[in-house]
Amino acid sequence: MTVDKSPERIQKIFNTIAKKYDFLNHLLSLGMDRCWRRQTVRRATPKGDGPILDVCTGTADFAAAYAKRYPERQIFGLDFSSEMIAVGRQRIKRTKLESQVTLMEGDALRLPFETDMFALVSVSYGIRNTSDPVQALAEMVRVCKPGGVVAILEFSMPEHGIFAFFYRFYFRHILPRVGAFFSGERLGAYRHLHESVQTFPQGPKLVQMMENSGLKNIQQFPMTFGTVTLSTGEKVENGDSGEKPERSSS
Image (cartoon, rainbow, N blue to C red; front, side):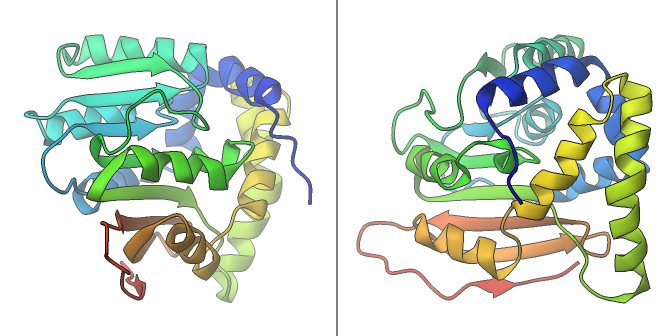
């Protein structure tokens, strides 16, 4: 399957749904998005001193969550969509986090930060939307400090059992139509969600991709019967060959 992830299409999709993005996340996940965010912020923790970067930050819900959990750290959020950033800035202002959180427009394939800068670099539901996920991950690793953490939260597809059957049906046929109805954006955005999840590496393939990018001690934490998975790894330090990956479940 070939998915059109050209910058123009991705910007158009997310600029169109930006104002309803949070509402639709709550609706289509049946409120589980809040639980996934709490678990991610709790499990994906910064190592050492330094700020935190949230790539593809969208409406800055994860950036705000990290700011509240780590009030002593500076948080940066970057996104390709100007409309999503605008909604995110409203959130940061509303929660009185302006002095701690900096949001900016930018390209995940060319992060505007120095090498070895962040104690934690995270991305949630965003890396699969980039035109080159391998390059996006390489950039995340580049700006992460040696020994620091890179975290990827992404949708994943349950593989076995009756739940997997019904979830795949919901994800393919029902979710795009409900999303289109409430967003007013036809089927494009939420059909893209299904297509992009189908083509993004999952499980051992994602572990291998993370290892190849220079990460070690990789752990995966499936949530809600494997409908989303948090994958974390530590940036290899000079002279460190890394360790074999480990899988965890919750």
